[in-house]
Amino acid sequence: MLRVAINGYGRIGRSVLRALYENGYRDHIQVVAINELSDIETMSYLTRYDTTHGRFPRSVVTRGNILVIGDDDILCFSCVRSDELDWTSLDLDMVLECSGSFSGRDGAQAYLDAGVPRILLSQPAAADVDATIVHGFNQHDIEKTHTIVSAASCTTNCLIPVLDVIKNFAGVLHGTTQTIHSAMNDQPIIDAYHTKDLRLTRAALSSIIPVDTGLAKGITRLMPELDGKMGCNAIRVPTLNVSVIDVVLRTEVDVTVEQINAQLRQAANAKYAELMGFTEEEHASVDFNHDPRSVIIDATQTQVVDGRMVKLLCWFDNEWGYANRMLDVAKHWAKLID
Image (cartoon, rainbow, N blue to C red; front, top):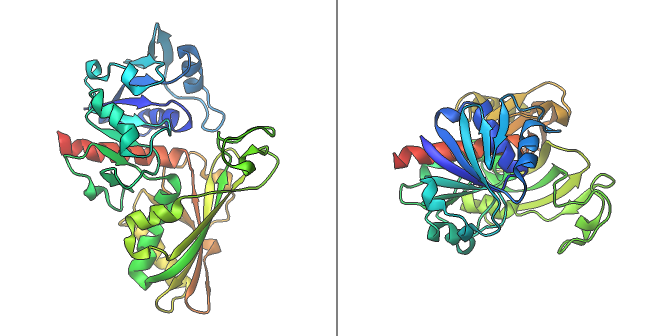
């Protein structure tokens, strides 16, 4: 049984814990501690009730600084710095770093210095971490000796399986992506100051807002053969959850809509089963809320222009899908350290 702590109990941290209990990961992974800069009553309340994902289907109560979920006791802390916590006494196998505070070895090193043997980052990481993993594509790259691993991003987990299928079938010369992403908690409800991006000072629920994205770097990290060949943009839209990537690819050979959809349908039933979905129904984004898959191909939107320009629409739940992938990576890593 893998013993983990969650550092950062926001949208992803809570989704990770909920998914652990809702989707069977509890048979392999136990959360023994949570560190979050909040009081335990608020943490309990936000675990039980969630506007996006609904009520939590397990009993949740508090006892002192312990969050009790069913028969599980989870120690809760409120420490600003990782070296303020006695991680060693918890007998941890891994910390799931969900605060978004660290993206490289320098920041995560504090965990190792405090006695944590392994850190799994819930965000894209710098090149100096041991591995960046998209489950289903390259989980075999994790090694027993690794100490800092990234589970990439929700967009990378969505796109890489799609690129993998198209590249192996028809080749990819170059392409562009437009991520249409739900609002996030780094945006204000009304106009307010933001430290870096002026667009992120604007009210999240009133505008479609262009934002920066590191998706092109994420693609290159996992598919170096596409370095410099993918252009990626992103916008935020006034929805709570579920996002979509509009992908345009130039293939090396002529293809048809039917061929592309057939390849993606096959991948959804074989190599990427349970990670990739394929639908020919007419959907809106809300239909994929709480969907645990990394990507769902909307086959009704597949287009091919002039034989070699392929256009795809790829849905994903940017919270729930990613939380499940993070647990998949942790579960796979656990097999190597038993």
